[in-house]
Amino acid sequence: MIRYPGRLHEAVEDWLATRGGSVREATRTIASRYKAGGSSSGLDPTAYVTTRLPATYAVNAGVMAEVALALPDFAPVSLRDVGAGPGTASWAAVAQWQSLQSIEQVETSAEFATLAQALNAESGLGPLETAKLQRSNLRDTFTTSAELTIASYVFAELPEGEASALARHLWQQTEKLLILIEPGTPRGFARILAARRKLLADGAHVAGPCTHDLSCPMAGGNWCHFKVRVQRTRDHMHAKAATVPFEDEPYSWLAVSRAPVAHQRARIIAPVKASKAGLDMEVCADGTLHRHHVASRDKSTYKAFRKASWGDTIAWKAKT
Image (cartoon, rainbow, N blue to C red; front, side, top):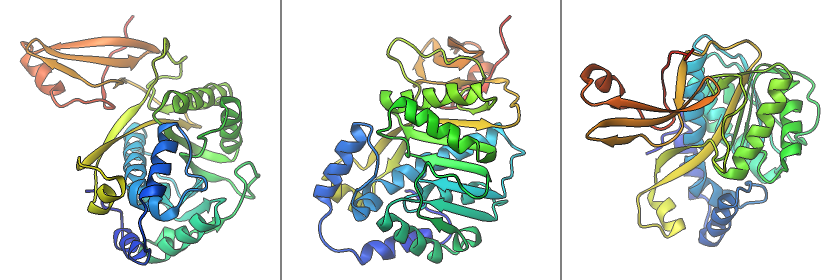
């Protein structure tokens, strides 16, 4: 079960307890919009907190854990959470980086801005309690830069060209690292890929999920995405009329750094296939897609790779 940092779990439950009525119809709207690769703009906050917040928090927490693995010395002091919603990405960032001191949350929706402020006040986490919330258009120029900028589920429904232009705009106001997260759909990945091209052209360096700064090798209708499994709460199951106690949330992401990143690993980009002969993995490394086989008879190597799964990185020696 997802557990939010500080006192946020209790704050969310207390807030939901004050809300009455069924959210099933609003939940259907959310589900259909996200399935189509849409955004949370204009959605019912109660339905969102009940059915979307656990998954989006799990995705953000997973992405930031991967970034911390790739950049172990990264210790941001300032964060700008763009399209903050209730503050989900800020929560995951505070949980991952205790170095954070100042947070700016940018949100266009009055309802979500009010909710974010209420949850910040009850969080018990210093950087959130003192966070500044700005009602602003995402294309506005901010008065200050931030070491870390996160735009989580913000570009949905934007054409690829507009998404890449907005990514560049955010990058120009970021001192060290920019993280983008989108739904793990072909359209979501297309926006991530367009932003990746634009940012690399501007001199950025990829920190993840790619383990290289070369052209993306995805082609032929394939798209780079990952999944996180989220245990549903009772209210979540009721809102979705669900019978399965979990759901898998697909997502695509990109993190780019001002400083070069030393990559000596490969990313597993599909479910690992296990058989009696061993493990078969599809990995991305050196700007190329590889099929990597680990034979079960090679016991030491097999043991090292036995728990590897989709989304993980593995040791990789560049081919010559």
